[in-house]
Image (tube, rainbow, N blue to C red; front, side):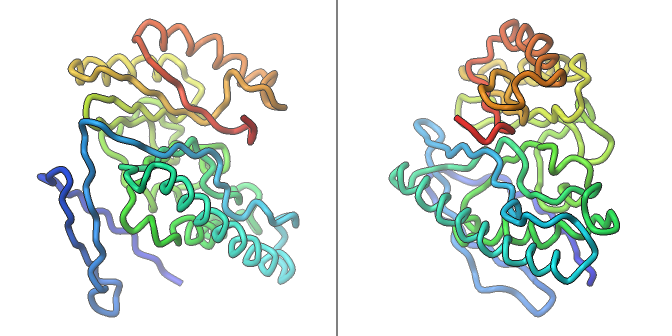
Amino acid sequence: KTYNSNKVEVSGLKENTTYYYSYDNGNGYTDPEAYTTKSTNNFNFVFVGDPQIGSSNELKGTDSAEFYNAQSDAVCSDAFNWSATLNAAVEKTGNRASFVVSAGDQIQTTKKKAPNKNAANSEIEYAGYLSPDILKSLPVATSVGNHDADNANYTYHFNTPNSSELGSNGIVGGDYYFTYGNALFMMLNTQDTNVAEHKQFIEKAVAENKDCKWRIVTLHQDIYGSAEHSNEPEITNLRYALTPYFEENDVDVVLTGHDHAY
């Protein structure tokens, strides 16, 4: 099958206002969906780590009916629980969450471990990730995890603002940032371990947004984790190399994933 990836930018939206959108899915325009903007003065957002749709599939990536059936079942189960998790999280904000920030690993199947190394084999997992009804009216800011990083399929599903080639691993793009109210959110692709590029990106983002009081960084690797990844050379190198740049640039909080543990 052939898929089309379409991205649209919308500007001039006002706070606390309901808008409606529809799109042509190839069979005509969809029914309008509502999107209500929230306040930028006092706001909530939801933070998630490693949704990893498809990860409950325990079979290896062989080109077999058994694998594809297990993957399909896993996506159904994981997407259902992902939807329930998002609904519960947003409910905890009093249904006032402005957006979601993700620390990466949106899906499970990497290109390297897909049957025949076919990049398209992760598409069903992205379909599961994007299936919750709540995501029709709730923006998501994703960072790149190791399960996303070797497959350009990631780039077809997310529209990242202020994108940079700094931090790019040559496949899924580099670092990017966005602002919301007086907060600057810097999303690092630390699958590229070139710390000098991340330093340059942070300094550039901070310089371009001097009015932001809060500085928040999201990256995938849990550089101060307490689980099995914490002592891997990649993690310790990022810990010692990145932390001074966070401190130099007055970063207030760093949000991470990867370890599947609090």
